[in-house]
Every structure is written in structure tokens, then in C-alpha cells.
Amino acid sequence: MLAYIRRVGIFHMARYKKKIVVLGGGFAGLQCALKLENYFKSDSEYEIVLVAEDNFLLFTPMLPQVASGMIETRHVVMPLRAIIKHSTFYEGRIKNIDPYGKIVNLWGSGEKRGISLHYDYLVLALGSETNFFGMGDLEKNAYQMKTLNDAVMVRNRIIDMLEQAENEKNPILKQSLLTFVIVGGGFAGIETAGEIHDLLLDVIKYYPNISKDDIKVVVLEAGGEILPGFSKNLIDFTFKKMTQHGIEIKLKTGVTSFDGDEVMAKSFDSENSEPISIQSKTVIWTAGVTPVNTIKRSLFKTDKGRIAVDRYLEVKEFPGVFGIGDCSVFFDKKTNRPYAPTAQLAEAMAKTAAKNLHAKISNQPMTEFEYTPRGQMAIIGKRTGIASFFGMNLHGLFAWFLWRNVYLSKVPTWEKRFRVFLDWVADAIFDRDISRLKFMRNEAGKEYKELDEVDDVW
Image 1 (cartoon, one colour):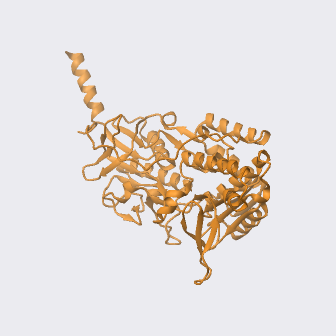
Image 2 (cartoon, helix red, strand yellow):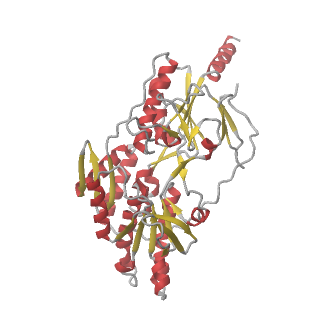
Image 3 (cartoon, helix red, strand yellow):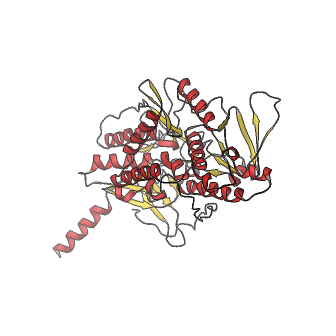
């Protein structure tokens, strides 16, 4: 009888633990969960719960190298369960968030029933999705560089276009097959353009009917410069080097449509400029992101779709709820403009949010979020990179080598670091693989059946 009472007591203690729920398994969500684990590792009263749509962290800075075939797909994904040590993990797609009832509902599927999670404290780190600015034809026909599947699809597309162009007799059609348009001149667009161009030049030796002059990679940027945030010297260096390599960059050029065969764009240099037409079968869209719909349709106050937070990263209307990463907006005091959503910013916000959540629970004063970028780097193809650190501007081979070392050190597990390193070594020694993996494009996301089971609610 005494043993039974003890078991019941232990059960109720475990069941009534206070829950800190972190939504999102990206850089912000994972970093926050790890920091919270460190704060509460010896506190049995609190349970940390991490919820993510996928059971892995995707190391997005290396996606362009996956698209070019330099890095194997599994080497840029890190299983979340192998990284977190003291958190409960749920893989699931979020249906909605009830901040009044403090409940997060997860969709069910054909194989599993829905789940409803109660929370005492909540961290929103749901990231962002691709923004096509209302252009439905681009959303339907363009490729993206947001997920692992996107990178694989881009690589398959490039190999497919080479295979078709190799035996194509019509010169106009052949040119359109070998013209690749990247929309967006930010980090993702420039690095993708450089990697794709390197891949094309490396593998055309397998295609005797395709020459270097047949290859055309075009970057379209609506703004007046590429790589915003870098110094003018580094921007000019990048523009010059990429142009020398054979990549065409068109500034102040916005895409208006893409039907799968022709890219239509307009120049912002003159109001009366003629429409620009580019015959291409492949467009890769990297031009913008927007918060996920879960945030947009939530009860949280938003600013252009992103959660509005105070200087402590807490949602004003709902104490104990914090917003971090791409799904929240925080303004730079110096410029009064929101910080650009980057992985570096996401991790900085995660650390402050975890610290403030712990302070709130401990009845200690919270810390204002302050952000000072440590620097930024990009690789632009042909073993060339640019980097800006502590006021120093670097470019060329050394910057490329620095990029590799810094990002390799940021890969969360030693196993994956070793695998990525071996991929780089193999790329330096062997030719690139031109095998095309037969994957199908993802269909539109399906919203699963209504919640029919409620767990963990009391």
C-alpha cells in the first residue's frame, strides 16, 4: 500500500511539472532549449519541451553547397534528439496557439492523432517561409532554397537541364535550358549563384556538346546593390569577381512573372523602361521571407506579420511568452529599423530570452536585449569569399578559408563536422557526381484532421 501511494505521488509530481514550451527547431529554438536546459538542469519542478515540424536542425548556411553536390544531404542535418539532453521532444506541425488558455495544438495525421500541450511559459521561434510577394506563377514554377528538399530539387533540375541540352539541336531552346536565373542578391542568392556556376563549369566536361559559353547564370536584384550590410569595397569586389567568372548580375531589376519558359522583369532605373524578357526554364527564388502562417493568424500582436516584443523579447500582452528569431521583430535603436533576420541574430535572441525566462521565474530583473553583429561572411564561388570582422574587410582565398572554418565550428555535433570536412576534402580531390536523384516536388501542405485526442492537459 505504501509503495502504491509513493508511485501515485511520483506520478502526480511528474504530471504537474511546470512546462516551458519552445516552438521551433531552428537556430533560435534549439539554442534557446539548450540554454534553458543549462538553467534548469537541477530543477525538477520544470520540464522543457521542444516542438518542431522536423526532427532535425537544418544547417542552412550550407544549403547552396548541397545544391551544388559538394556536401551530402544528410551531413547538413543534425537530429534534435542527439543534441538536446534534458528536454522532451515532439515532432509535429502546429495547428494553433491559444495564449489565453496557454495551450498549443498540434495537427494529427493519418498515422497519429493530434496533441494538445499545456504550457506555463512559451518561447516562439517558428522561423519564416519563402515570400513570393503575391506572385502565384512564381510560387508555382520557381525553385526555392529554404529546405533540404529545395536544395536537392535544385541540383536535380540543373543536371536535368544539362541532360536535355546535351542533345538539343534547336539553339534557342538549348540556350533557355542552360540559362539559370537566381532572384535575390542577398547572401542566399549570391552564394547559390556562385555554387551553381561552379557546378556547371565542373561537370560540362561530361557533356561534349555543351561549352562554357553556353552556360548562363543570371542574378536579378531589385535593390541598388547586392549583399546589403557589407562595405562598398567588398560589394564592389564581389560584383567584379562574379562578373569575371561569367555570372551576370542585374541590379534594380524586379521580376514580375515566370510561366516556366520566360522570366519577365522590369527595371527600376527609369519609369518608362521596356520590360525585360529572359528565356529560361529554371528560376531559383531567394528574394525574401515572411513569417509562417501560424504566427500571422495567431492572437499575438504583429508588425508586418512578425511578433511584436518588448526590449526583453517578451510579448507585452502575454507575460511569460517570448518571441525570438525570424518570427519576431526587434528594432535597432540606432537606425530605428528592424534587424534583418539572420541566424546570428536568432542565436543572440535565444540566449537573452532563455536568460530572461529564468530571471522571470526566479523573480530577478530581466536583461534588455542588445545586439552587436560579430561580423558577416559569404562565399562567392571559385574558392573566393568575403568577410567583415571588427571593422576589417577581407576577400579572396583567405576569406573563403575563414568562412569554412567558422561555419564548420558552428555545426553542432563533431560527427557532422567530420563528415562535412570529408566532403570538402573529397570535392578537392574527385570530380563531382552528376547522378540525378529521382525525387518529386512537394505538393502543397495538407492540413490534417481535427484534433481528436488531447494529451498533457490538466
